[in-house]
Image (cartoon, rainbow, N blue to C red; front, side):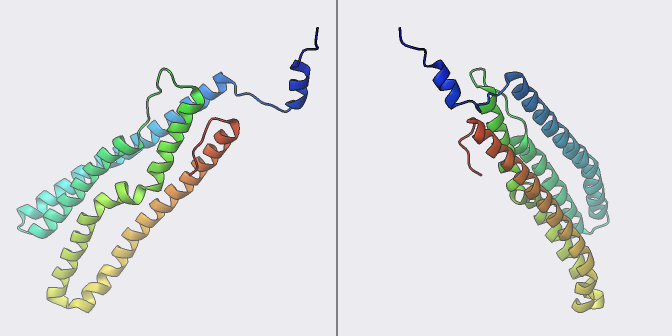
Length: 197
């Protein structure tokens, strides 16, 4: 009878580690809760904004300031598009019954990584038409009475503040995407991922 190959195999892979299914499931559940909390905060922020933009837009339309009113309504419409995009691009994905936990976690990480990296397109982008229209309308209105130099000088600080805020949002999402990319690399090291961000 020949000796069992098992001792040779275990000696060759003495540093092998295996993923605990319960730990993987806990990690996936924690990540899904984190995504759900983030998306809930985003929806609450949007729900707070909608009456503001809609109410102000309606007020300016009532006052005959059509361009300002429509610009504000356009920003509100942008918020609604962000709602839709949040659900389509950054929501949790359901685990398939036949799918291993690591494969599901990889898909979840990949979806969130891609959503965070594309925030300028699906989160900031829908707001830009209304924001630009509002700045252009207000600046042109001020220019009629004070001239273009004064109007542009007056618009500089609000414009810088608004687009500085957009830049901060984009930067924070890029940093979060990098953290998820590191998680994807760790999954790859476990053999659960073939994805390269």
